Image (cartoon, rainbow, N blue to C red; front, side, top):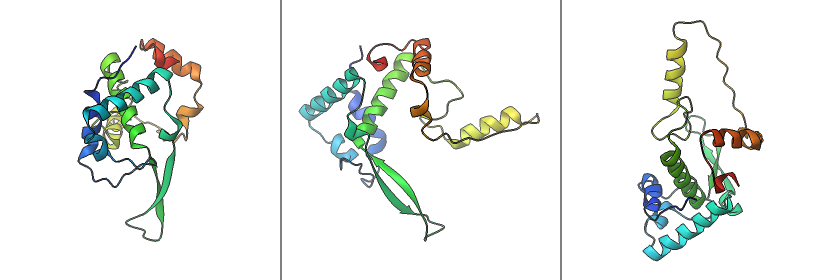
Length: 170
């Protein structure tokens, strides 16, 4: 059974703490608010997060997003849409990911998402180094909602293979 510890809370907010509070999520909570919470507030928040972990799901409000148009710098007349989700939800997901990485080890070496310090450049560099001496056909696919559309049994099977067990599979 996983119980996230109070030490995990500052760890999950420290990477975001130096950012300006311009990224308020749908809950209108900023990272700086969480980083300044009292010890009693930390324990209450941790209790809520652990209850969410034990239930096997995040509260619905932590998954809601505000869609905000941001003007493109090179095309001021057009904009891109950005989803601002709950800071508490993002922080909880980060805490759980850190726990799982600590408990079960790193993700597969060809998975570049959700890996601290790894970006698009590393994935493209790896791809190019693998095909540089060969003819290759490369297809880039953006699978919208890929995780949501994946069969639950396939995900559970892979997690069991990595020896993940407990409430996360509930």
